[in-house]
Image 1 (cartoon, helix red, strand yellow):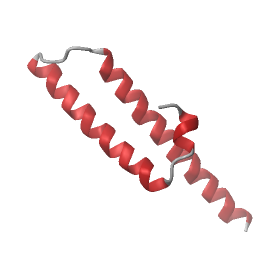
Image 2: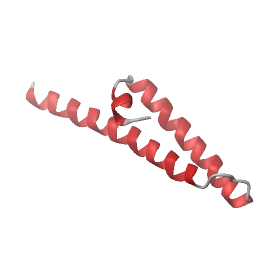
Image 3: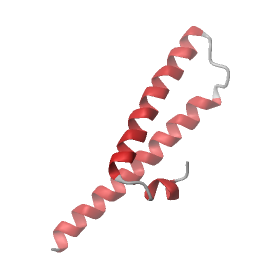
Length: 71
């Protein structure tokens, strides 16, 4: 999912995506340890997706803070 697509989602959906991403990352790490991971690139994809979600959440946080200061 791209950052532009993430920006269109509501806050609660972003938090849910973050939680799901963290769970998926945990499961992938577990698969690495047990030697069951088929595609090692999956780890970096999931990490990037989590980073995108966190970036959008932070952008909204900064925008909200700037809105309060200007009011």
